[in-house]
Amino acid sequence: MNIILTGMMGSGKTEIGKILAKKLKMNFIDMDENIEKTTGKKISEIFKYAGESHFRHLERNLVKCLAFLDGFVISTGGGIVLNKDNIRDFRKNGIVFYLKAKPEALYERIKHTKNRPLLNVEDPLGELKRIYKKRKKLYENCDFAIITEGKTKEQICNEIIERFKNAQSGNRTKLKNR
Image 1 (cartoon, one colour):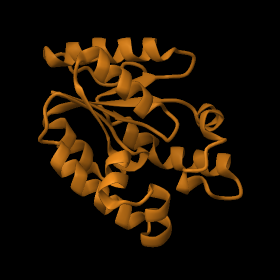
Image 2 (cartoon, rainbow, N blue to C red; image 1 turned 45 degrees about the vertical axis):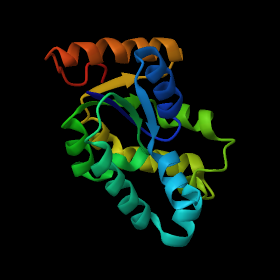
Image 3 (cartoon, rainbow, N blue to C red; image 1 turned 90 degrees about the vertical axis):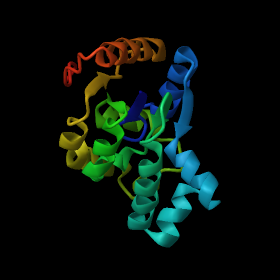
Image 4 (tube, rainbow, N blue to C red; image 1 turned 60 degrees about the horizontal axis):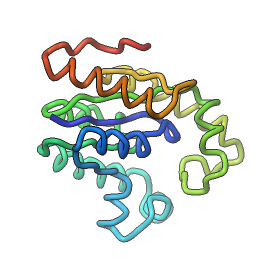
């Protein structure tokens, strides 16, 4: 059984994923890092020269491979939910967690980073709000929502571990923390 982490950029998927994998003695894969490694290009370069649709194609192909793995914590890109088949495939052998935070909190976490191709615009906070609004319902279709604001990484990990263990034992209650 896998743990799949999704959420908006800046939600903490990679950091939380690494901690979870270590705590649970599971393997860790960051999908964006994997795509960069296999293509030899940064995500921002893929977006710039090949476009978002090409990136989503690469992402979809990777999901098809990762969905067959077992014992992994998988950190997805924030747009993974745009294709419902991605979440469907991940659910075959995993529990999908949405790391939830308001756009303003996300922006505070990422405002100084330059590797966010979707935010290379004049009003990055406004764009983040627009993306969030577009994806909100898609994220809410994940198995669990974990509110990340006002919590330590340790608290977030402990909450995910508790829900993961409950879900493994058949108690897959949806979105407790909406």
